[in-house]
Image 1 (spheres, rainbow, N blue to C red):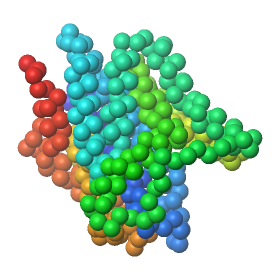
Image 2 (image 1 turned 180 degrees about the vertical axis):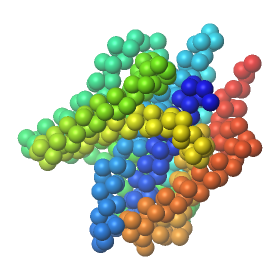
Image 3 (image 1 turned 90 degrees about the vertical axis):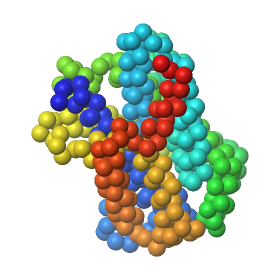
Image 4 (image 1 turned 135 degrees about the vertical axis):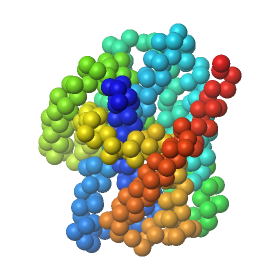
Length: 367
């Protein structure tokens, strides 16, 4: 296996890990079902809550965003090497992703594909912008001026709550059809407002930029890939500093520092995992991760469609009958089944089910 192939496969494995973290975060809260309880009644629940707060919550989402920006760079760089301007085709690719997101959002209101598709146009706009300007834009996105201003207002006692566009429902929908209607209307507006006011949209854009900048620096390619452990070590120092600051600041600034802690976690996990998954001695054991990492679009949509039926009242209703630890075990079991499925699928197919459709539609009209 060539070094370049290892690099690509290691990124696939990192993407699979990010997907697992997202799945665990969503399953911990029963995919948003109102029937779940936050009560920690057992030691397993206490451990599960700690993992949710410091490992699952936000980190998988940020890793996914970083990898989206990195994949954008890889596609553009590959096209540029052939003398092809891929920007228009990538915009069409984003439009197709938006369609996938709209369909998935009908089943699960916290879908991120729609956000990625719309935010992705920013990457096309800045593709020819110099790296220094991208770093400056990245600094603005991660500084979160709106969230910081809100934290300062809370601390000074001058914060005035805004008016929500819609009220979130107090209970789960009674039927799947009611869920589809609610997810496609009121909860869609709620999600848009939440993305703006919580700063999640800006973190998405920031991670997109960071992934693109890292791609330009060729960090995951030889010979610079040998420095990945050092980068991970630097990220760990950054993470420990952010944890210390988070614990030291007043309560009003906790949410703001939580975002920085998640950025630092991603800065530690991605370079470490990219190096670890690239170790030659591990290659024969990582095929299941590579398989699901190459099929994350299908796997992500499958998780939202199937597990909402597992946790919501119009399905099995397990959201209200399971503990925190049990929901994480359900998620882990489902992920293992997905790895087995995609490992088998890719033995006979070059792409995942929806990845193949996405690729064919993207290439319409291309030679």
